[in-house]
Image (cartoon, rainbow, N blue to C red; front, side, top):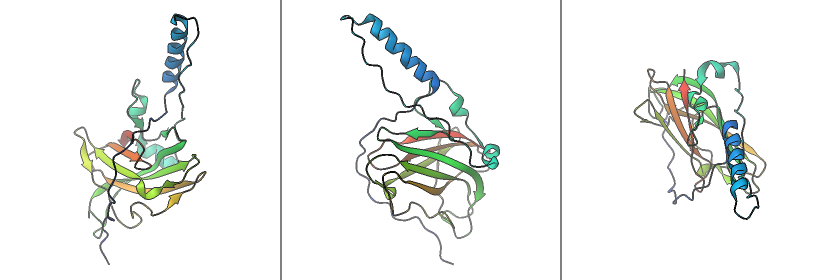
Length: 209
């Protein structure tokens, strides 16, 4: 059988950061209080416009196995605007959504790249709620694991072929199977996903059992 190998990675132009609009309920309340205080102290007596915040509910598990395999300690931490739980959905300003689901563990085959390597497998879902096309082959995925932030190498194996060479039309969605190296004695996983080259990375963190 032929050995699986990673597909060539196209050069990536400099990113143009785009703000991710997502917050917890506590953050929404804090924003409302801040807006009320601002309105009360404005010198000209006119209330300033309150900030717009998108609140996204935690994505439901695809199956009972998800609930047994995945936990999201980062999602329970308060005051964190930089990372999201492994089961959360991140919504961008242009209404493109990114979420992860169906976490499981496995070991790559003798013909995989890298071979015989323990990994965490999951699904990446991109929902294109914008009015423009999203190129799926521009998506970037990076993983790290453990307290020291070791790089989790992408796994290419049967059913894990990397990014599809397709486009996500407006109003459509795409789900991509992915796997990253995760040693058997490690639980903490960090996954950074960007739906295209011009979008800021969404950082998901949590424990995989």
